[in-house]
Image (cartoon, rainbow, N blue to C red; front, side):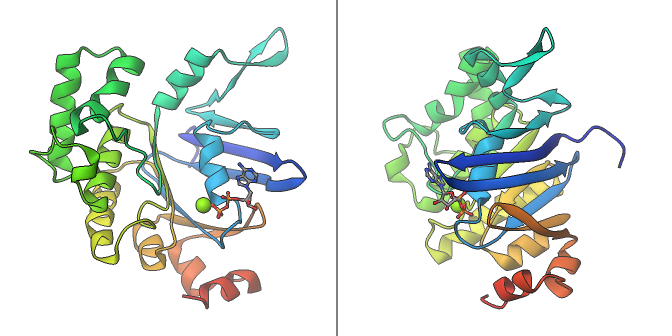
Length: 254
Ligand code: ADP
Ligand code: MG
């Protein structure tokens, strides 16, 4: 593929004190591609998506969204940090879904879905509301607009969180273990929504411990360990013909 990737992650490094969380990660995600990220706990998967979403700064390397540098701009031959409002605008072009849903508990479902549309994209409240209702229907929650998060199951809350992330028409969706906080019987309703997004051509990075899902939904799968990409390939390559002993050891645990 020669087109500009939707997301380019180039040799990204991230430290927490002395601890190297990302040790030179490179990853391109093309339009319509679904990349799943697997790896042991502590391997840097969350840090990777958090850095892409600019919830964390990076210590080296660069990231680009549709060819545009994330978080910085060049100014007289130097890089300087973007002002907050421009970072917010870049973040608005990505949708992030967290393990713990992260909905605003004291807001209705509707307000959870409309706030960013109005604040980041300058939509009118009416247009934001229309969009929110359309998205709620899409995630199977028509009729829940006036509910508060605590009145919903974990699976429903996570579907609201997905709808919220979609509400700003993101170029890419980032999922960080979207089903890890759910009771087992609620996992499928959330995976179903993610599957439908994949079928609709959404560009996505999905960090997951659900190995069957990581295989089924992916165009490409990335295995991380110790802040590095150890192996990347098609689902068949990663799950049927893993070449690294580390990946084989990891997969044998499931
Ligand atoms: P994963 O999501 O693969 O389990 P993380 O990205 O959460 O891994 O963490 C990678 C490493 O970075 C771990 O060793 C973790 O303890 C460390 N780490 C993550 N976030 C922080 C933080 N905010 N402060 C200090 N260390 C962190
Ligand atoms: Mg994590």
